[in-house]
Structure formats: C-alpha cells, structure tokens
Image (cartoon, rainbow, N blue to C red):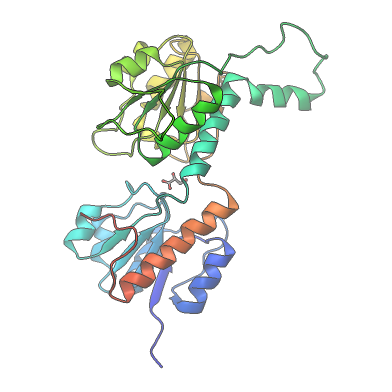
Length: 322
Ligand code: DGY
C-alpha cells in the first residue's frame, strides 16, 4: 500500500473538511480551535508537508517556502492571497490556489449587513434595547439615514463588487463604480455606471471597497480621498484592512469628515486602531465576510479538491500563480 501524502494545516477547519483530510492524508498535526501556529509550528509543518492549507492570517514568506523541500501546493483558505509570496512560490515550482466564488454571496450579504447596520444605528440600538435604559418610542430617538434611493459607490467591480451592486437593485440605488475595466451588468440592470475613482468618491452616499490588496491598492483610501467624500457619506470595507489608511479614517470619523463607517477588516488584524471602538458612528466586525457554516465548508472542500488535483499531477481548479 502506498503511504498517504503528508498535509500541514495551519488552523482547525470545519468538521466535514477535517474528515475528508483525515481519510485521504497524514496530517502533520491537528490544531485546536482558535489555536494560532507559532513560527516553529509552521517551520515544522512546512518541512514535512507535500501540501499546506493556510489562512489569510498566515504570512507565507519565501523563507518558509525555502524550508519546504517536498511542498507542491499551498492552498489558501481565502479568496484574497496577499498573505502569500506568490512570486517566490512560483519560482520554487509551488502551486498556490485560492477559494473564489463560494464566498461571493456571503461576503456581499455581510457588506449589506454592515451598510444597513451603520446607516440605521443597529448596534447602538441593540445596546440600548438590552440595557434596560430605553424609555420607549419617541419621534426624535436614534434617527439614522435613509438607504433606499441613495447612491452606492463601489471601488473594485470583481465578483464580490458585482454581487454587492446586484443587491442595490432591491434598494433602488444607482451604482457608480470605479474599476480597471467597465463590466457588463446582468440583463435588465441599467443602473451601473463606470466612473473615475474621484467621481465615485465625491458622489457616493455609501462607498464600499472590493479591491484585492496589492502594492497599488494599499492605502487607496487615505486622508485625501476621505476629504473628497460627502460629509454625509458612509464607508464600508469588507475587502482588506490595509486598503484604508486606518489612522486617517479614525481622524475623519472623529472630525466628521464622513458620517460613519462599517468595517469588517483592519490594517493590523487582530489589532484595531485605538479609539475606533469608542466612536458611535462605526460598526466593527471581526473579519466575518465568509463566516457562514456552509461557506467555510465549501472553502475547505475547494482546498481539498485543489490539493488532490496537484498531488495527482493534474492542474488545480483555482490556480493563482501566473
Ligand atoms: C477571503 O477569503 O479573502 C475573505 O476575506 C475571508 O473571509
């Protein structure tokens, strides 16, 4: 009988994925829930593995790849892969894969949840309702901002940007978007308009970010861009934290340069700029874009599929290397 191939997983994955992995492969180790690997754990894992499943919170550097003589594939448990030195992997003949499509709708849904939560002050309201201090209904109490009919700005019109734009139809919102290329809206949608980023910044009532993190998108939104936005506008980010200069955003929120923000991602996760948590005009989530039971299983199964293909000498389903 042939020996099972060795896999290193940096984090515990949802149970059906763990079962699929245990049935097919020898795992270097089984992480516990919420266990974060140390540098030593990672080096030990990479040294033995023919395949690795890592997450967006694991920086995969050239050094780590250099210490992995048997490694054929790094399957990133995320659609974004800015945590991996892909050029180094490619140079070393290591395939990198990601998990597109399966998390598009969940991330678009969460984007809308954040947008609505910040516009309608849902977190403040929830806190008040729970506190026992709510005195009862009053006409001027906890007033938010209309969403229906407002202008939605989107920066980055890939899969998730488009899924967010589609949902805007239900709110009768025109969509202005900035992206490298114009995209074709689905049949029947006539409200998506491709514009330069400056126009989108200036005209959006809600601005949602959906670009991958790269050298060109790091701090895409800084104090200059925030100053171009309407003082009544809200900024929503479910992409990657470093796309926003978080210190500049904190200043803009405190000074009323913009009206509020809904954030799922941060510049230095899991750290969040001191003071943001005390502002009433922000809703903060702990990177939950893809966090549904169904999606996290699908992401894991895609990793398993990509690994099976590469270890059998076939092309992966979701290659990232160019
Ligand atoms: C991704 O896959 O890039 C998401 O950020 C995960 O939630």
